[in-house]
Length: 356
Ligand SMILES: *Cc1c(COP(=O)(O)O)cnc(C)c1O
Image 1 (cartoon, helix red, strand yellow):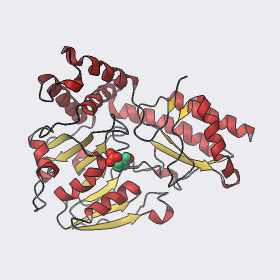
Image 2 (cartoon, rainbow, N blue to C red; image 1 turned 30 degrees about the horizontal axis):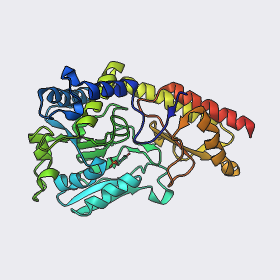
Image 3 (cartoon, rainbow, N blue to C red; image 1 turned 90 degrees about the vertical axis):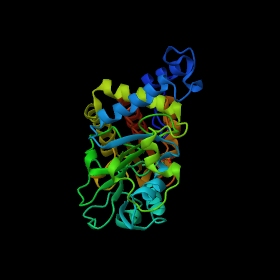
Image 4 (cartoon, rainbow, N blue to C red; image 1 turned 45 degrees about the vertical axis):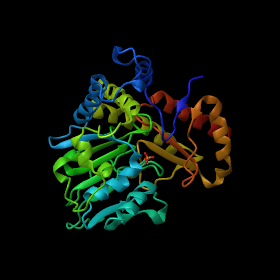
């Protein structure tokens, strides 16, 4: 039966990515070897990592003076590498969820982590607004999409300092003005590739100013200088990411992807808003994520949540159980998810509602 994959991460990959990855595992670039068993320094793999980095630059319209890196350790290692490399004395943060919170915690090991806005007291159900970022901080860090809570910042914030963002779960779903950022990072397993690689974009001349010794592997300059090949990079996730990036380009780039993502989100939020039994968890509609849609049963129908999960399972709907810190349901609508899957979910919601 056809499956409809709403998992939040690792998550759906396009057929194009899956099929080309399988081909590369069997016979990589006509070498007669698998991409799994060939040197990362071979000219064939060099072409993959160069091609992937070039496509990232093209798709995000990255200006001169930035490097694209492919690193291990997940987005979580970036919570440490970012302050290690960029924090001199003080950085500002918005606390918008678990991942933002983790970034703040790690930054506190290197200097002052100033929280200028937080929705922690409201279980992160909105994006703080009207906060002020002091001009004397080294940078402002934010999480563009809060994967667990279903809130998203869909416009580059307007602050008086350089920015750094965790875009793990919404990169390539909107155009970004990269020139405002010293760094952008994204664990690949949400909207790009299998788990195991993190895409990092750094501004070259912003590096080397933190004034502290940095261990070699944690120093971005190492990876800039060596083209992400100081040590063996995660070759298979990079190979898969390259396939996804080619597919993104074929589809028309981030503007086209954003349009598709907005249509999918509109369809699902529309069904939630029209529903008698379901309701969204994000309090300000402006903050609703188009990547992760969080919803619950209204209080008077709360006991039906388990029944709904049982109801959708035979329809091939997978991965909509909400994160334990929000409960209810979360449907992730990443780039690779076809709108047909959203329609199947919406139909299931209507059918279930009619029965109750
Ligand atoms: C998943 C996620 C992370 C954590 O990524 P890892 O690769 O597991 O370390 C960090 N930030 C955001 C926004 C995420 O969605």
